[in-house]
Length: 364
Image (cartoon, rainbow, N blue to C red):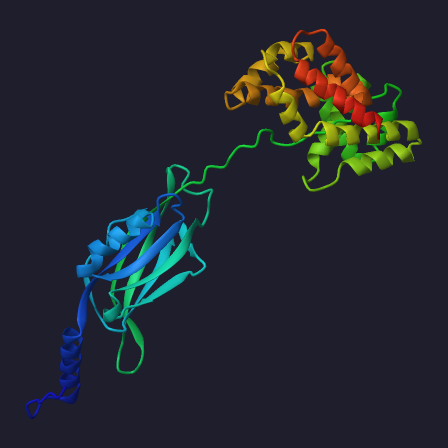
């Protein structure tokens, strides 16, 4: 294209006019479209689309499942090869790219990129149903010196639903030691687990929670539990106690504890509790009372489960496995359980399961 100008027009004005003429002769009117997947709103498709192709683009996105999210942006003008920079702001960020550049070419009708959204801080915006942010887009243009500058900018609001975390049936598997001898053994063991000062502090706190004043048996039980809770989750809290028992020359008690821990981890696991719950075919609360759980425990099981009888029975069995009755039974826990079941009618499936477990234990 050749342009003739009048004499006397300054070169910079002439070049500016030529740029504008070139821009408008090669320009396309476009919109930014951003849609999230209905089945996974964390996936986002960003597109720069010519105005006459927006409806087709939205229909195609809906066909592929991208049908939620903000409305399309306002209209603006791009020329072939011009770039749009898209960033996230607010409490939403994009991965794997923190910035997406869409290069528009008129012959392609659209430029697109798929990204994954995530919350910057899941602990913020608790007052909202979801995480809130924006997609900030900027239209970039080269000047004659080759420097990019922002010609136009805009934004689209983005809402990201908070993930619903499935609650595990039980928060953690607890293992309590099966014996608390009243001969001072545990007090000696406990004070070998940490510094004298640390353990004295734990003992003083335990004494204030003891129902019977100066009851060393009860104090030892509380101290041992408090010590285990005070340690990081990833720390092995069982081996130090077993080593302490051996250092105190209580080898028989250490061996019995090891056997009980083995039974607890292998035969009283979450999976085993789930299998046992499936075999409780009638009212589980009657069994709970036989197992020594209180009415408060039973109510807690009903309130803390998903509502089905199997879930309630599972929660009840998880409470039972860390109860004082199981602790006192030690390695005879399944013998004692079978004795209780034999006094009850029905529950034949559970009785058979316990007999099978006892058979497996006897073969080890």
